[in-house]
Image (cartoon, rainbow, N blue to C red):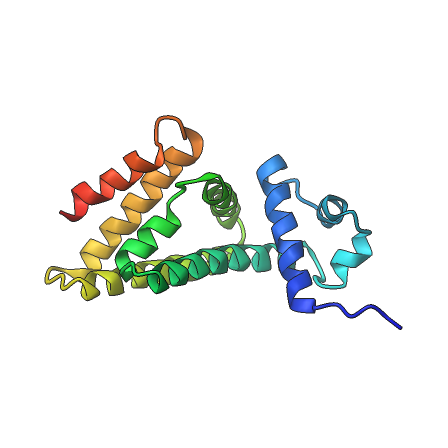
Amino acid sequence: MPKLVDHDARRAEVATLAQDVICEQGLASLTLRDVAGKGGWSPTAVTHYFRNRDELLVFTLQHSRDEAGRRVAAAIEAGADLLQATIEQTLPLDEPRRRQWQVWLAFWGSAVGSPTLASVQAEAQRRFRGQLRAGLEGRGFTGDLDHESGRLVALVDGIAVQATFAPRQWPADRQLAQFSNHLS
């Protein structure tokens, strides 16, 4: 009897392997063969789920964003408000989130020359800004929501870049303190 495979779970597994390859060697040199090798599979196993490299990259970026979204939802379920959950679950406060930022930063660089990746990146940024805006509204912020949500995006991105490349200088408590200072 043939083995049953959960195709959604397998696609997610391939995306996770692609994230690992990106963190190890960068996005520019990533190939379907590299991803397959990381999983101990043949390249055909990857091309069964993704027709080409671009399709894999788009899915990998979306998968990475969805992982962050699941963390935010879990934090809210555990009692955090939307703004706190969004900031804390997005920042590179630990190794898994730092690796996620390595992936996101690799995509940022590649999105410059790829209309497809630029579109996916722009949508992700629009959604992130909207989530921060909703979090500010939930806290009763009465100022210019567009301006302040833009400032928070810039603050998250700036701190995350610093913490990704200099984690010793930007431990979790320092990252979070920047937001406590800003939000007060």
